[in-house]
Every structure is written in C-alpha cells, then in structure tokens.
Length: 159
Image (cartoon, rainbow, N blue to C red):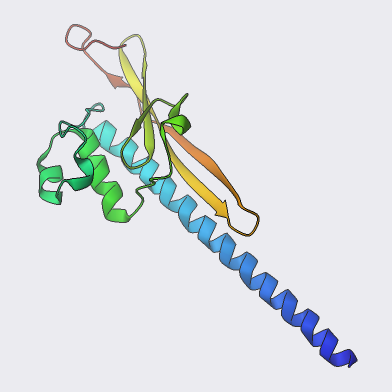
C-alpha cells in the first residue's frame, strides 16, 4: 500500500512538471513572435522613411497578397507580414493602445513622436496570455522605437 501511494505522488509531480514546462514553452514562443513582429514593423517603417497608412479603407482583412504587396503603404506591408507569420492578434483592441498611439489591424500600435528636425516612431506589439484553469488573462506590451527619421521641414508637417 505504501509503494502505490508513493508512486501516485511521483506521477503527480511528473504531470505537474510536464504542464509547467509546456506552458513555459508556449509563452516563450508567443513572446518571441511578438518581438519579431515589433522588430519587423520598426524595420519596415525605417525602410519606408515613415509610416504611411493604408489606402484600402478597412478592407485589409479581405485583401489578397498581390494587392498588399503592390501597395506602397507601410501599413499594408506590415499587415501582409503579420498575416504570413500568423501573428494577427485580434484580441487586442483600441483600449490597449490608449497611451501607445493608434491601433492598427493585426494587433499593434504605432505612435509618431516629433523632434526638432524629424520624427521617430514608438511601436508596440502585444502578448495575451490566458490561464484557463483560473479564468485569468493578461496582456503584456512589447515596445520599441525607430531611429529618428529626418525630414525637410518645408515638405512634411510633423504633429
């Protein structure tokens, strides 16, 4: 009898370890994906020398890859990247972006900050972690900044 109870405790510890390790891996993968998205958004903004919004008028979800790749808008290129890697975080809303800038389709925020001779952008992507056993969820923001993009003040209004 004593050995069977000891075996049950050991089995419980093994199951607990597997659950904790699997949860850690899942959170780690989502965290890495959110960092990759943030870094790619920053790269695209710097390559396009600023953030230009989409001209598709709310049709990003139904746009084809050909329409997105032929567009010159930074938002379209970002959305194509997000959709291709499977990040599109639909649980993020405009409430998450209150102090972080404007919310864009795909679950990220971009805020333009003006300097004396240019601007830089703060980009925020999110991780949403849900714990179903205790009915809890929380959102972790991941923020990064672009380099300063210098503008000719006569051509571009900043603000």
